[in-house]
Image (cartoon, rainbow, N blue to C red):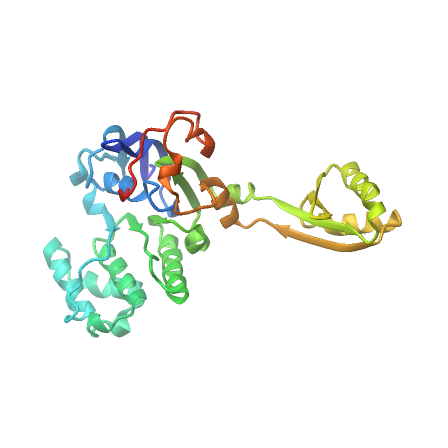
Length: 332
C-alpha cells in the first residue's frame, strides 16, 4: 500500500492557487524529499495531508484512509510542522513525558525516542541549554512518540548551521532504514539529498518531478571544455568531436563539448593523434542542486509578481495552462 496518494489535490486562498491539481504517489518505506522554493506549496500540501486544511478540490489518502477523515490515520502519523513550544525550564524528558501524557501514550516510549534521536545523555538537561540542532532532534523525538508508520517533517533543517544539518540528515537516514516512511520538505535539495531515496519537486503548487534520485541525476548534464594551443586548429578540433557524436559549441574562445566526463581521455588521445596540442581540457558535471535550480528557476526564492498572468506557467515547465493571479506575501 502506498503511504500517500493524491489526485488533483488543489488548494486556493482567494486568487492564490497554492497547490494546483497535484497528483502524487509515495510508496511505503524510505525517505522522500519534498522540495521546492519557498512559497511553492509544500507546507500547504502537508497541512492538507494531515487534515489541518481542507482542500479546495481533489482527493488524497494517507496510509489508505481519506484525508476527509484524519482520525482514521492520525494515530499512525508523527509530524513536525513548526518547532513545538517546549517549556525551556523543564528537561527534555519532562517535556516529552508531558506530551506523552496528553496523548495517552506509554511513558516507556519517552526514553525510547530519546535514544533514537541521540539525546539520552542530555535527557535531564533543561531545554533552554539545548542548541538549535538539539532542539530539532527533540522535536523529532516528540513526533516519534506514537511510533508512527509515517513521519512528516516540514523544513527540519531550517535555520541550522552546517553541523546541525549533518546531524539531522544522519538521523533521517537512520529512521529511513527502520522501515518507516518519511516525507521531508525542504527548499534546498542539497540539505536532504544524502538522506533521500526518492524526491518530489514542486513549484507554484505544480509537480515538476517525482521519482528516484538516480533518475533525477540522470537528467544532469556534463561537459568538457577544450581549447587548442593554436587557434587555427579550432575547426579541426570541432570536426573531431562531432565525428564522435558529441554536440559542440564555441564560448569564450573555447569549445564546449556536451559529453560525459570520462570522454575527456578519449578526446585528448584523438587530438594528439590528429597533431593538435591542447592548452585546456576540463571536464565538469552539473550537480543535482544545479538540476534542481534549473527545474525550479535559478532564483530559488521565486518572485511571484514576475510570474503572474497568461503564459507564466508555460515559461516554467508547466503543461501550458494559464497561470491564475497570485498574491505576494502569502506563506503557501
